[in-house]
Image (cartoon, rainbow, N blue to C red):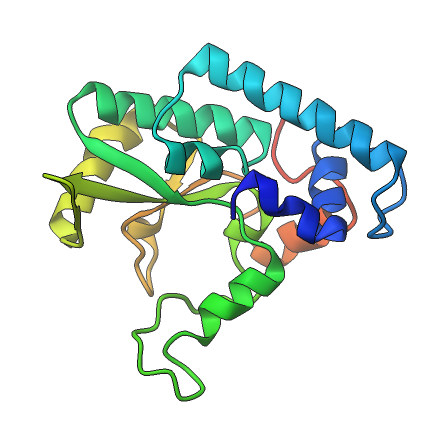
Length: 205
C-alpha cells in the first residue's frame, strides 16, 4: 500500500496516526480537520526523514512513506547499506490495510490456483501496522526469486540493525524477503490490540 491510498480507509489511517502521536481526535473513520492536520504532520515528518536519510526508486519511496516514522528511518538505512554496496534492492511492499491483507490471504485458497503467499488474514500481519516491508532483488532488471540471494542479503545487514527482524528466521512459513521493525511484543495479537486503540506499539527512538 502506498501512502496515497491511506485515505481510502480513514479509520485505519487514524489508528496509525494516533498510535504514532500525530492524531488526537476520535477514531471514527471520518476525515475532519484533526485528521487533515495529522495527515499533514505525518507527511512533513516523512519528507524530513527522506531528506535526512536519502531517497530511492519510486516504488520503494511509495512503500517507505506508508510505514510509521521509526520504520521509515530503519528502512532507509537498510536500503542505503544495500544499494551502496552495489545491490539493486527495492522495497516492493509496505503497509497494508486489513482488507488488502485479506485479498492477499485469498491467493492460493478458495479455488485460487496461485501459490499461497501468506498465512495471515487482515490484522494478523505486521504489514498491517506500518512496521514491515518486503524487498525485491533485481539483477539485470530481472526480479530474483532465489532464496540463497535473499539469505545473503540478510547476512550482509542484520548484524548492523539490532532493531530489525527477518522473516527468514521464522520457524514456519519462512519469508526471506520480509523485514520488520521490532515492536514492543512478538505477539501480533497484542500489537493489533494496541494499534486498534491508537496506542504506541514500538519503543521510542
